[in-house]
Image (cartoon, rainbow, N blue to C red; front, side):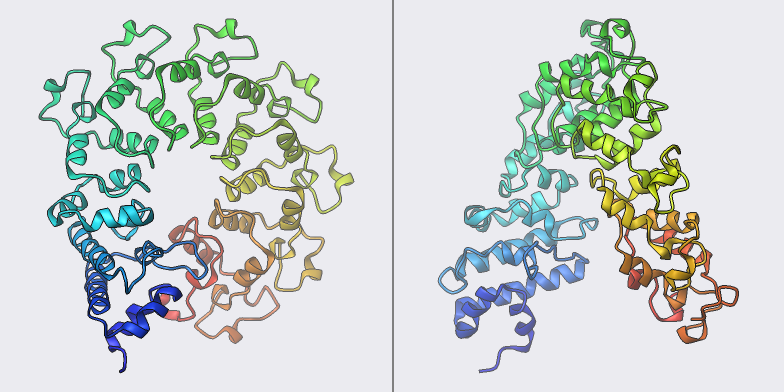
Length: 500
């Protein structure tokens, strides 16, 4: 018997193991029900513009299917068909802003959570899916299974999560939920389930999180939450749960985080928090919890981060922090933790980052850092950590990044970097790491990027730059319309001239 043509594509979405289970039993009534329910689900997703999220397997599988990896499609067909039926109920009810299936599958982990889903009432599944806070619910219940409807309702009715709450639920009973606050709570409770009312209230009542707090809770009891601080705390405590009062206070009382700190806490005890500094620390500590005093102080005492540092700490011991450098370091170390001294020094000592470097270290050993270049490197390495010397040098030695390059490296070996080009490349590769030579060359060799291109590459692929130089405005167009994507040639410039 031939497979129903509508089911061929469906069966192909299952893992190889499941395909081997299904094919010999495709006429089995239970297996037919599974495939029918999958067909209905896929039609719902297509109609609603919801993409299938994929797992990280090789090859990658849709997570809606990979969640059943421990099930047998034949012997456990009832659970499998029930799962796809509930998924259809779920995605039929989600808001139009939900664009991928991960909001459901991220909550499921193991056979138990899938089985429990199949036993839930359709109305409860739909009610949870229809919540305007589904994204936050999904985050908190990551790997915890679909929560009970009653618990979701109880969480979303918390008075402390409503706009303007100052400790009295009755005063805000008619107010809407504070969406930003719910997002911060969900970030800290990512993968930890819906928090209890007492825990949320205790966190939101912390005096140290109120505007103007200087160590005395009583003095700020009527003040609103300091939203910027809550943002930083939630970033550092992502997935760590709601932090305790003692830990938050200890962090916010750190003398080294106050304006003007130069190593002596007593000298700045009455100073306010250095908000810029807290932003950088929270960026590097994102998802790692509140950092300890010793680690923060050690980082802020690094001589290599002070203005004018040329390799000798003693010479700059009384100098202030070089804020531009701190910004770049925190960008590269976003979510990586506070970097060790040896790694920071090694990066800042890279001769290839000095002004005028052309491949010979000795020629520029006394030159200052090329600040523009450091900016570009830090942009590409955002969240990637401090790059190794070999990788930075390899990138900066690329002839295709030199002025006048037309495909022949030897012709531009002594030319300086094309700064405008480096700016564009760094923007497109923001957070993607330093790109490989082959990808950059492929991008810059595109005939469609040449001036006067009309759809025929051969007509503009001339070596003479005066005849057909790169069309800089087109590169800028790609940059502005597809930022932070990496150098993905086919994405930017389809071969059809009607793309523009």
